[in-house]
Length: 424
Image (cartoon, rainbow, N blue to C red):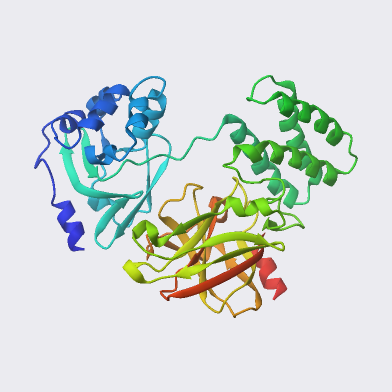
């Protein structure tokens, strides 16, 4: 922990001498932060609040942002966005570097969370490194970091509204009360039909009017629940980062499929991430072949590389009511990693389970979500993920071996562990 000790000892000021705003203004490294705080009308907050912690990006960190983008944030109408970005760097209370040891995350004034990790002696906040810690101010503490932390995108009000309906309806459906679930969904859909808001297009309104009438006339509670759920999914699909809701994410009941690969467009939902981000030379690509997703490429150990991965976001509540993943895969004899994430934004924090494959043989792999290991930049650290927090999936080839690889995935299911035990 020598690096951590060095960071803890790196302080601009030995004792409190000014407010947080004053400390930032007196630093040659934080000029852009001061200008941004002024543009966002946050100087008074940093000057008069009783106790705050600020993770302060340096001027070099801000310079990594495109100049036109930064200028647009510093002027109207970008001010609300800028204010949210800056609030994402501020935590209530005085939190010193030593207080972060053993802490998984901190909550910001933006209502977001920042993951915390100590990796190889470095303090990491999100994907930023603390370069200078525990700069004391009269009303809190400042930690200087090496990059700007961007908060997760705010979901539109319609997405939050419909996701809330699904969140309430799914457990009711799973408990066998299909009629009550249908009523929850029907209430949500009918509110959209009767309202002039929600930023719905004329085509969506026509679709709503027609499908709502069709669903309401169904006599079977189960059919009615599924009909309304399809309406909700069809409205969510184009608003969820391009993911497909209706065909790929289903209410857990007797149908447990989380993702299938019948549509060729599913391949475009997966993002390839290679070790080239660190100078490596590994390759990778995704394609849909005969109803399966095929991930192929070659790992290279040159330039300290050695990994190839694919990642995909999921709609909110994708694992609702389920606690485990079941994979149907055909591998190449190498050891693979399946991962989950708490955010659709692909940062460095994820949760892994390794599984061995047999070359050319189909296998079923069961993965209890709560047993997955937390990793940060490939280093295992403390922490866990709950099934209802799963917002993204990934597959890694990262076995520290060079050579070609191939993984074929036919289906990914969301199931309960008790069902896994019963099926063995």
